[in-house]
Length: 125
Image (cartoon, rainbow, N blue to C red; front, side, top):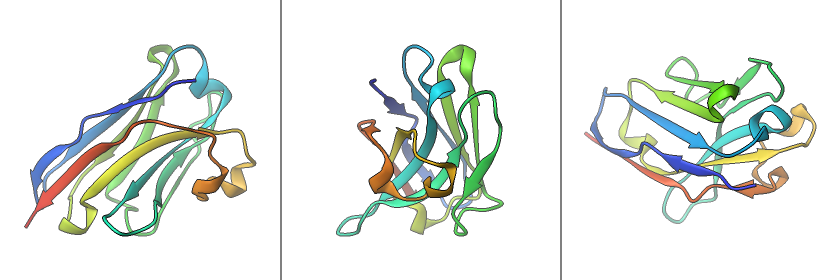
């Protein structure tokens, strides 16, 4: 399994970006998909996750609830992270990853087996 994250960039506070995570085959049908981010000198932290199969069940970190939306298109083998009302503290490298662990643990980065290369999001104040 290979994942490709894209869509990062520079945006002003209050702006929006949409990240994409693409792969081949039925990866997002067979695996839960998560987005994580990492700030310089910090550990990778959970942002959002979407359940496998055709489910649209999602989970979000408290810091992004109401601002970020995770979704997927199985036919296009793509998972999206729509980020609205961005804040400077959202700045960091954003990664997508997949796991087959129980849904209860999808906010734990150590449970994920495959990671994309990361895409940088920079929010200016």
